[in-house]
Image 1 (cartoon, helix red, strand yellow):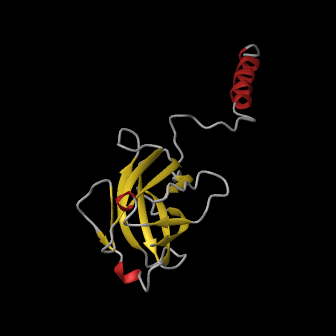
Image 2: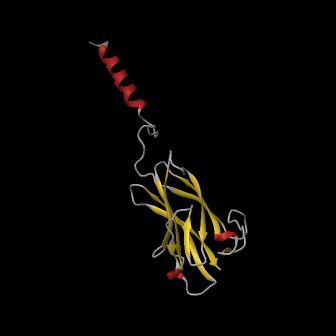
Image 3: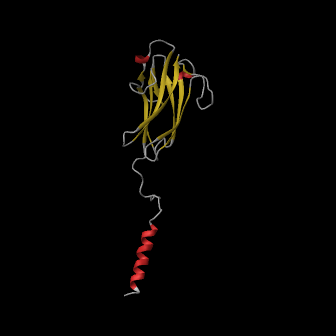
Amino acid sequence: MIKILPAAILFSLSFFLSGCGSDTVAVDDPHEDYVPELYAFDIVDSYNTDTATPQHPALAFNPFINDGRYKIFWDVNSLEDYRVSLRINDRATINGSLLIHSQWCGAGRACDQSGNWVCEYANDFYMSCDGFVHETDIYPLIDQIPQKVYMFIEVCDSNSGYCEYDYYPVTLE
């Protein structure tokens, strides 16, 4: 009886101590609060001004230069699928903005942790991206030309409702 007791105590003590000081989380147990994090958002405007270059000049979209095309680029860190959206507003707030284009991204999709679109600003005040037939009428935002607007990129989690965004001021010519 005396020999069994020390062995049982040692086994119990080693089992108890093996869990102490361990802050690691098992890889198979993903954290439920992961949300997409927007790392970068860049625009190349009608004049090939690229926001990825330091101290770039002001951005401008012109429907008569390069057929009104401009490019959108983004980098996101996300463990789950997320929705990326391009929006426009006449003020520096996403509230009340107009949706230009939206797409689901994630593993196995056309965009994963990064993506890009070629978009168009037409002289009749419509915008679209990636050749989609759906065009957005931005005329309600226009008071006069040239007009200062704000282009937003927004990334939203697929299941929590969490969103974050960034924007650039752009002059519509």
